[in-house]
Image (cartoon, rainbow, N blue to C red; front, side):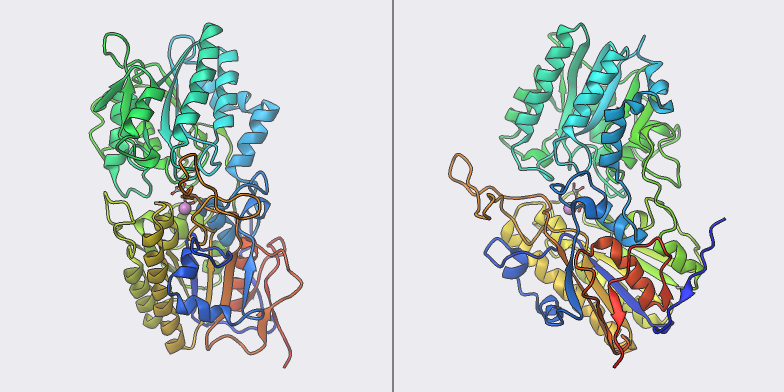
Length: 553
Ligand code: 3PG
Ligand code: CO
């Protein structure tokens, strides 16, 4: 039995109202024309920076600091918010899958045994994001799984690909599909009937999140399960090349691969096995529900095949979804949210739909729902649906700011936590001008929140989950922008490996509170203990150390 009682902080008082602001995709990088945060007017964030080094500093948000396999792995919102909320670094999905594949343990687990019972008579379907981005999935893991499954009896395999262009360069989908086609051809030489069966761009097909738009999942279902799509091709490389004429990788329309009789080569039917190969949860949970829940009525599934389904990981620890999985997810327990609620901290969390689960589900260790509904209120502001956010770069920043302000002023909450999505969501579109507008809007939202904190004598802590908007071009090792073969700038739609800022302040901050100078490598996981201190508590022993100290004046 875990005790959630926290010790009192020896110097810091309880009962302050605290705003915890996470700017999504807001890193620190050299000021040039591709740094949208630098180009944008961001007076609030600029003023916070003046507080360095005592009240502003940088922290690490990528690679090992957030539990990713290597230091070359850029940060992302899942691992970032996990670290922020949990106060410790957990080996994350990407790494756990690597280990399970390398040791072969993945094939000894319940999940693989379960799906392999379909190998004799049925088809094995693999559905997921096809890239080496390492945020939701990785191509090399898919390759190993294809090899391992075929060596263990899978005779007929169909891959349903989702093209990326968001965690990797736009246009790279062609190369990834070619690589996969080569692998599948080699499997065919060995007598395995292995093919790509369908595809589509991740943002238009399947990978919606937080139930923003079920049509996205439906388009995928139609292609993957029913074998129906507006575009039919004999060959996936040809499909992607052709469809790219009118859309970029993220938004390719759904297509199915057909045989000489124009019949889809790989619909999902009774007796088949299905694995969703993404390790990251947010953009696979909706499909997992459609595949696993008998009574899912979010869209008309038309035909619900009786399949053996497993996720690469279990995506939702609270819902136990999916019930079968190949690799056990990180056990992110005793998160700061859970502790604080047990210690009387009334909590409010808010973002718009596309990031709502980041400050709730990810923050709470991939757990949906409340710890204690009497103590918590989570507010979701509906995101615009069916647009790319460069057309609406202000998104719902103002609304999030207003909700947070009202929550702070209401006096009903001790912690008001928000995610402000603009830098990230607009940064992912690769539209530099729009991202500048996005950064300005995010800065204005921060101002609204800080003004409210000022009014109530509270404390703020402002940080970010990973970089994105601060660098919009691909660069060589010396940091110069790279051009493609046509001499065009290579736009970076993905996150970065840059550190992120963290600032503390507000009238309620006790005099003498400042960032310690002896945690130079501090990262996102150090934030939870810091927030606990500001609420007047000492963090549990195994939490990463706090970033602050109280100097005697
Ligand atoms: C996405 O899912 O949109 C990107 O792959 C990663 O973005 P996020 O980690 O900021 O959500
Ligand atoms: Co992002």
